[in-house]
Length: 122
Image (cartoon, rainbow, N blue to C red; front, side, top):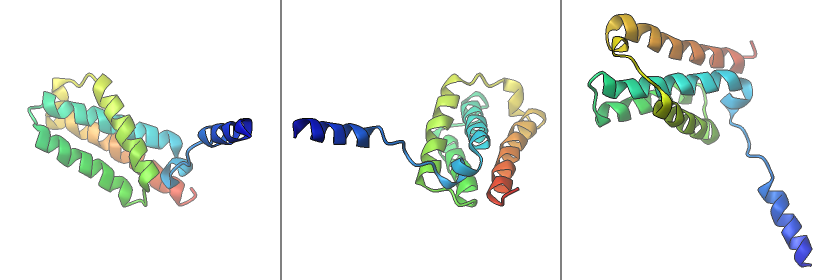
């Protein structure tokens, strides 16, 4: 009986987590979106921003995905991978000006558009 309980517990522990709707549709684009968001997040301090701006950006990054129908799994994936990318990113001061910031932000929206297109089946 003890072995049966242990086997049941192990099988539940080994069950993979369900992927979110956006993750199922476009896993690579979701990863790229989270990494780009992490880069932008890390650049806020380099560009003279504060914790309030970081919080605001996090909410923008989340809201962009919520508009596409992101669920808790998608948002958890975003948070985890955005934070991981922010910790390892090496933002450049040149990304602070318009010439640098526009391409960095454009990449984020490129990945969002790829996710949106994948959700529509194309």
